[in-house]
Amino acid sequence: MLFDRVAALFEAEGFALRTSISPFMLKSIDPDPERDGTLTHLLRADRDWRAPAGAPGMGEIYLFEALARAMAPSRIFVHGIGAAWTPVALALAFPGARVSAVGGVPAAMTLLGELAAKHRLALSVGKPEGIAELIFLDPVPTEIAQAAAFEAVRPHCGPDTLVVVHGVAVRGLRAGFDAIAASLPAHRAVILTRTGSGAGALIPANAPPALARALGGLVDPLFKV
Image 1 (cartoon, rainbow, N blue to C red):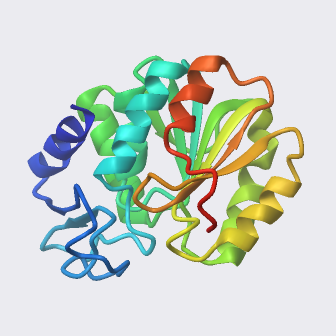
Image 2 (cartoon, one colour; image 1 turned 45 degrees about the horizontal axis):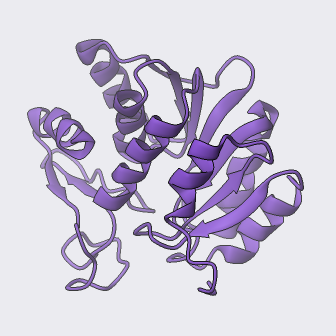
């Protein structure tokens, strides 16, 4: 299971994890890991490693697994790395891809480099060269930060790029997501209501059937966010 593999890497570095299989007991969305029931939080005594947006929870790590069965990108671009959790998870899910990551505090960037070297992950700090087939946005949870993150990745977004935006529904960022979607009219915008954070996805018009199936099972067409 991908989640176990990612967790093991961080636990070996001295982190304790707080995550959730189901948010029904802890229903709040909260930066305090003792109250949040949706996201993943990394805790270590030497500093506060918590990401302002919270890192993807267990259910969204499953999303990465589902995408890995449906697509084989050569380049992945992550904007907003938290405590390095997301790019490491994507590097493990897509071993054939080169994962580039920006948008983290210096300590997280250093940790990312250390983990990449120690575990021989195709993972680096910085922007990719050329177009990325998968882009994952996880900035500070405001619409201003969301828009700025998209503008930073836009040059690396092509007609066949799948864009996933973390936390759209639970953070109340639907208006900003819709604005991003309007700038990519050839993509189909959906809210992945079955993910823990209600991530948004911009799906290429010519997405292969396997990718459409992988994402379709995570969307409730009648559910209004």
